[in-house]
Structures are given as C-alpha cells and as structure tokens.
Image (cartoon, rainbow, N blue to C red; front, side, top):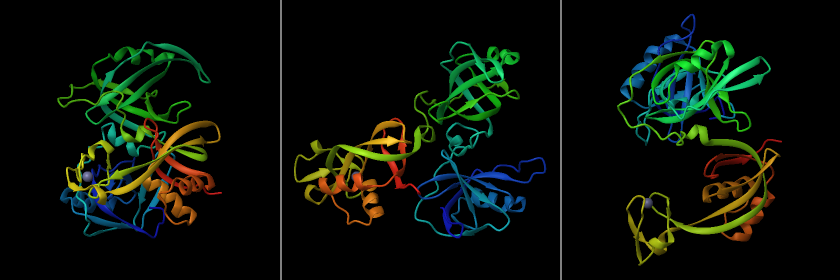
Length: 345
Ligand SMILES: [Zn+2]
C-alpha cells in the first residue's frame, strides 16, 4: 500500500457523482482482499469507466496511486495517471454499504463534512459549556442506522440552541453538513453539528438497527506507539487447519475434533499449535494498557527482529521485551492487537 509504484487489486464500489464547485473529483470505495479503503479520484474523465467497472463488479488492478494516511484512516488518491486494468483475483466482491451510512464513515477524514440519515438514541440533557469561542450549548446522543452507531455531539453556539430543540430521541433524521471530529482525550472519531448543519425528518428504517454500543470497527480501532514493559500471560492454543480460528481446549474430547467456527472435522494431533501473550504496554508514553497479541503478531515481531519463529515462552518473552518502540493497531474494546510494526526512529 505504501509505495506509489506498487499496485492493488480488488473491486471498485459506490462510485459517487462528481463533486466540487467545478465537478473536479469524486469518491469511491476500493475493496482489496483484506481491507476497504476510501478512494478519491481527481480526474473527472475516469468517472464513467470506473462507474462501469463498479457496476460490473469486475476485479481491477489499480496502479499509479498515492496513499494518504492519518491516525484514523487511509485514503487512496488517484489522478489522471492512474490505471485501472481488468484482472483476476481469488476473492469475491463483498457488499459495501452505500456511503451515506455510519459504517461507510470508516474512510472519513478528520474535519470532513458528511451527510447522514440516522436515528437519534440516548439523547442527553443540554449542558452549557464555555469554550474559546464563547458559551456553547451542547447535547450528546448516539446515532444508529442498520450499519452501525456513532456518538453524536451537538456542539452549538447559543444562537443555534434551536437546533437541539429540533431533534427528538427515537426519531430518524437526515443530518446535513456534520463535521467529523475527534473526541477529547480518546482520539475516537465522532460527529458534530456545525453552524451550517441542517436536520430534516426522515422515515424510520425498516431494517434492524445496530445497538448503540456496537461501534463499527473504525471507531474502536486505535493506533499507538507502544513500548512493551512486561509480559503478563503466555499461553498456547490449538487452531483449525482450515480457517485458522482458535479451537477451545474443551472441544477436544476424542481423536477427531470439529472446528466450532467452520465445522470442519480434523485430527486433534494435526491441528496447529499457536501462542498468545498479554503484554503490559506503555502507549504514547503516557498510559499503561494490557494488550493481547496473538500468534500472527508475535511471529511478525520475530520476523521484524530477524529471529527464527518460535512457540517457546522464553523466546517469545525475550523477543517482545527486546523490541524497540512499536506502532500498533489495537481494538479499543477487546485490546487485541491486529497490526504491529517498528516505529520509525
Ligand atoms: Zn475452522
């Protein structure tokens, strides 16, 4: 992903109409084998072709792109020189929700303006908050739609108090011109109204809604610079030869075990042995958090250090404690680390 000379293969989804005062750019979503990215193309003449490829759900190989990374998002930037050629891939196109829902905000930029239709839940009382720009009235709620949920922070100048009054708990609205914000302290993305925001009543959703606390992935994934201070727990487990998921030890009652995840029966002594650790880490030089690293990330550490892979407690402990500063991506709720790399010096 990092190198401009590389290429990515996957599917194009949700090519949006041209935007900008001179219709100079458009948004779309690129689905690779492992990830989903927001892509912005600054070449209007590519619009039609990419739209056709998106409609046809035919896999493409994209080259000559740039990548813009922030703490919370990765965006693919495309211009005139980009190429999208037909190719073959070994994974299917998956349904990507249209961009006006909560899950699709995964690719949203900090400070970006968005329009979204969602139901208001858990609307709290109005508080007066003094800010650098004067006294503001603020109310908090969650927004939910069938794809996910997000905490919405109403943050208004007192002149705009009326907008808080326009919104009722349990009703569905289309919110125009919300701004993507970072929550104070946590760096989690949130949405806030702005002076230009407008709300319109919208029909209730027919589909089941997400639970307000089930935040979509992008809102629970955090990045941090981590120093591993110590190891709490080391453990080994067995994983499925087919799907790689953990097989709980109590599933092994005989010589044959059926994977609870993919239901494939296999011989117990041929299942893969894996390891995991719980490590106390100092994040961003301030807070200590215990995170869990599973086999893949542990083996990645061995490979970063140039050491042979091992499942032994001593080797694993030593490798983790020998690590320089790491850049990690972890889930804010489960504290499971999903990506690890050396932090550039
Ligand atoms: Zn399995």
